[in-house]
Length: 119
Image (cartoon, rainbow, N blue to C red; front, side, top):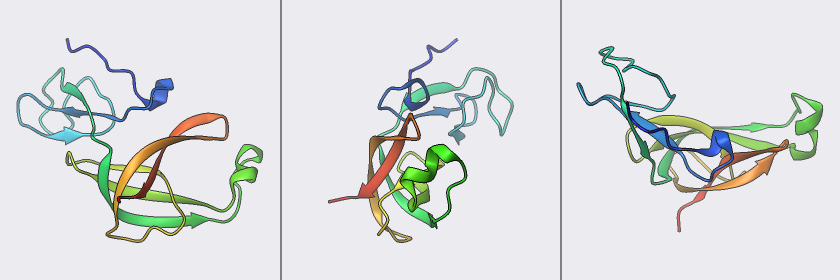
């Protein structure tokens, strides 16, 4: 079995993804199997943190009391360089197609991926 890499969900400033050793499928959410072919034990890897904005949505109404201090904030779908798509936070002026790089920022008491325009 592959060793699990600590990522942002455990407080580390890292995004991880998995690649199936049988069919090559790339998936973002951790699973014990490949979502395409069902092979067990996909290989876990660190992502580069580079990507392109696929969609963006400015949130202007707090969903919880903890998020009220952050309004307005931008939620993105990012096509990451390694071939998976993820949801994350980002700068408010990002547009579809912008190239971005990740950093990590606190949000409602947790560390979250935060994308900014690539320089």
